[in-house]
Length: 418
Image 1: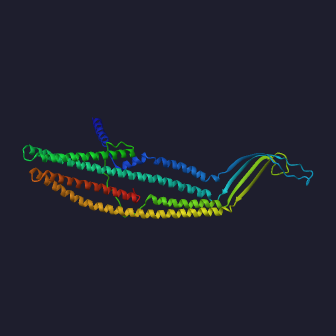
Image 2 (image 1 turned 180 degrees about the vertical axis):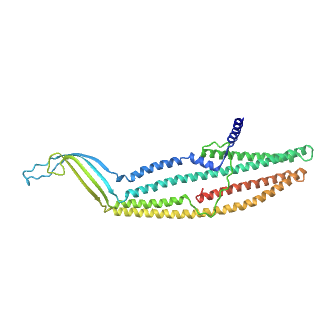
Image 3 (image 1 turned 90 degrees about the horizontal axis):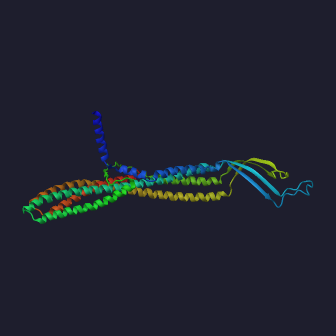
C-alpha cells in the first residue's frame, strides 16, 4: 500500500511538472547562446591559436635540408703554366649533401610573435563575446515586448468580461422596457472593438513568439513567460564594458607588433653544420669524389633594415593614436548613454507612483459609473468612455513597469554587467 501511495504521489508531481511550461528570460538567453555558433567559434579559435603559436616560433625549429647538384662549368681554375705539373680541374661538378641549421637567438622574434598571436586571438574571442551580448540584448527586447503584449491582453480580457457583464445586466432591463435597446447595442459594439484589439495583439504576439523560438531553438508557442524580477542596479556603478578590454587589447597588440618588427633589425645567431659527398670538395686541388663537412656559428647583423623598421614603427604609433582617440570617443559616448539611462529610470519610477494613484481613482470612478448606468443616470457612452480610460490607465501602468525592467537591463548592458 505504501508503494502504491508513493507511486501515485510521484505520478502527480511528475504530471504537474510536465504540465508546467513556464519560461524565464534567463532560460531564453541560455538557449539562444547554446543554439548559436559562439561555442564552436571559441573552440576553433583555440585550435587556430595553437597552430599560429607554432608558426610564430617555427624559425627557432632546426632546419635540415638535402641539397644536390650536377653542373657543367664553362671555366675552372687553371694553374698551368704557373704549376706545370698540376692537373687541370674537371668542368663536371657533382655533389650531394646534408645541411643543418639551428637558430640560437633571433632578437626575441619568437617571444613577441607568440605574444602577438595570443592578443590577436583574444581579439577574435572578444568579437564572439560581443555577439553573445548583442544576442542577449535581442532576447531581452523580444521577451519584454512579449510581456507587454501579455499584460495588455490580460487587461483587455478583464475589460471585455466587465463589459459583457454589463451587457447581460442591461439586457434584462431592456426586456422590461426600462432602458432603450440602443444602450445595450453601444456596449455590445464596444465588446466587439475590444475583441478586435485583442486579435491585433495576438497576431503581434505570435510574431514575437516565432522570433523567440527561432533564436532559442525551442518551440515556445505554448509557453507561458514569467515576469522577471527587477534586476538590482547600482545606478552609480562605473562601466566595465567589454569594449574597454577590446581597446586595451588593441593597444597591446600594436605594441607587440612594433616590437615584432623591431626584431627584424636585431642581430641573429645560429649554429650550422653541412656535409656531403662530391667533386670538388672544399679542397679544389682534389679532382676525385670525396666526403666533406663544415661546422660553425653564423652571425647576421642587419644594417639597412633600420630605416624600414623605423617607418613601420611610426605607422604603428599613428594607428595607436587613432585607436586611443576612438577609445576616448567611446568612453564619452558611453558615459552620456549611462547618464541618460539613469535619468530615464528615475523618470519611469516617478511615473509609476502616479500610475498607481491614477488607476485606483479610475477604478473607483468606473464602479460609480457602473451603478449609475444601471440606474439610468448616465448614458452608455459615458460608461464606455470611463471604462476605456480605466483600461488605458491600467495598460499605461503595466507598460511603464516593463519599461522600467527594460531600462534597468539596458543600464546593465551599458555598464557591462548584463
